[in-house]
Image 1 (cartoon, rainbow, N blue to C red):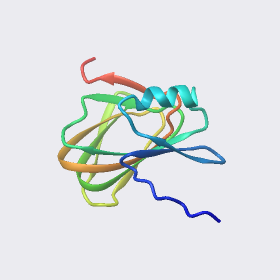
Image 2: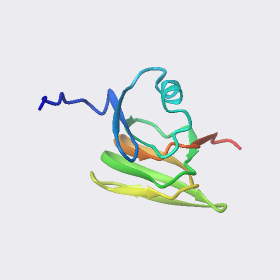
Image 3: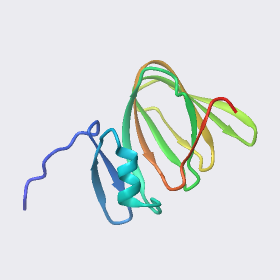
Length: 132
């Protein structure tokens, strides 16, 4: 049995499907590379990690399933918009997480430098600016 070489979530994300976990190097053109390699992302989820120092400047929505969002450190409010109403879910302690429902627009307000782990059903993901 060969020894597995450890990877780091800051430089290598993981694409999950029903049978495999596929490491993908993070680069300046990461999302373009994903599109070329995985096409429509059907049946796949992306495991990623981000450090935020300011509020998100856009909204996103994932129609293909719930998104797992877990705070590793910091303090972040997730603003969820569904059926014309907004609600805020505060992540204040390491390990706090939410499951963002499928089809729910969401953005984040960042109160302090924050580390967040995501497991995202990326098929059909949409983005929009804060100004509508």
